[in-house]
Length: 606
Ligand code: M6R
Image (cartoon, rainbow, N blue to C red):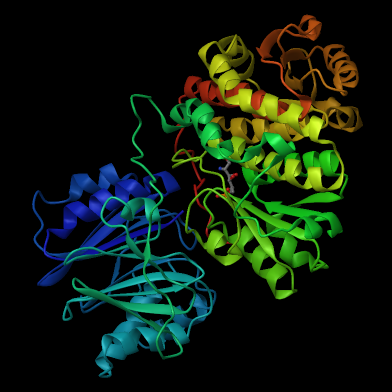
């Protein structure tokens, strides 16, 4: 989604801004732009990739401060004029903005009535004119920005650059903004990935914060006036360099990183002696785990699929009711919150607006929420203040892979922990742990010989639609496989619990329709075979993901074998072939695997 990068210091700003934009590219965007302060404010912006912007930049741009933006269209089409930065009519003020201004229509109308000629269709452009009106009436820059923001409703991560003032002003309300303090230079970003190579000294702005940024310092105040309590954090987590390490795409790299990422996630957390798990970030004493009435898990997209697996694993191992919720629905359904219940917010980015609003709803109603989050220091992680980091490392491809397996692993660890306080024996816990420890190696083995993925691709690449089926823990794996293929190969995909197929989706099947079935050797196996027979009787071709050595393979047109493991752990392995299938189908269709159309890595609007 939209990204912001800014710099002020003694170095040339333009190359740093372009490099910052490149680091934000993975979030998804459709145009980009920069403005550099060099006597005048020089704006360059262009539809398309940052590489398109680079083509229109002069070889050398003077100027030691500037702000930059990647835009993911919300108000107005994908055009050069709608791209940010937006410049005031007198050329004195430039703005980049993430978020949505809800009352923009009225403001734009009033500006036009005053004689302003708006050059874009965006909500963001209004801000630059409002700030200019304030400056023209004699306000200082901070006051002009403050007065402007006080007239807005909506969300913003905002940066303002001034021709006449050597400073950048930033503000946050509902859209993340992070400031970095270097040696004689300061940085701004909407995403910690883009800052970590420049400085470890970070300020995470809170909603309602404003900041004046100079090369020598950062002064944070509150929108309503007075100083802010936001203080500097030294980021210790080694986020690492996010390059492709010789792989043709981030997605393929991240699929192959799963064994190592999983090792990181479970390392030090499996407690074999007690047949349980240690999750230091969870502030849940045994008495709370024993007395909780239920568990609720909230997420979007891939995180939601992980929640659904967590729901089944927690119920199965701990015999406590658990429910997975669609985050975007949660708050608006006015949920009843029991303060004794256990709530999890699951998110790779930790910035997803829908999940964030669900967290706020629970907290407002007296509940506490634990984060299951990848990005350290992200908004959800900080708002929850407790939880589990999944330690996947940077995930750059829009299609989530290694975050999914580590979310599932983290929820399985929690299921072990709560299960041991409530229901199952140490021996059962130890047996799961023994298999859990082997999963990274089993994943590695599978990835070194993934089976006939190319045959599956041949069946799928020209399909009108694809049906994914699974039962029990494999039903959410089917959903995840369908989501992956749909988002990067643009093939309509349906995922159904296998038994539900005959109640509707069977109508889609005709001679040659591909059906992907996930059927590990668990207690659902026989029933899944019946569903497969129903599909085959209608001429469907079955791509079957099953455990090695299982005679169920005879049912398949394409049989993809995964290693055997405890049935509670199977999603960690059965999802991997679905990731490879999606990747290779997208490649075969010539799609942009890492940056699929219309999608954003971090969805920061509701
Ligand atoms: O950062 P989050 O985990 O909160 O993101 C949630 C979804 O937007 C995300 O999983 C999305 O569905 C992915 N593109 C799936 O691959």
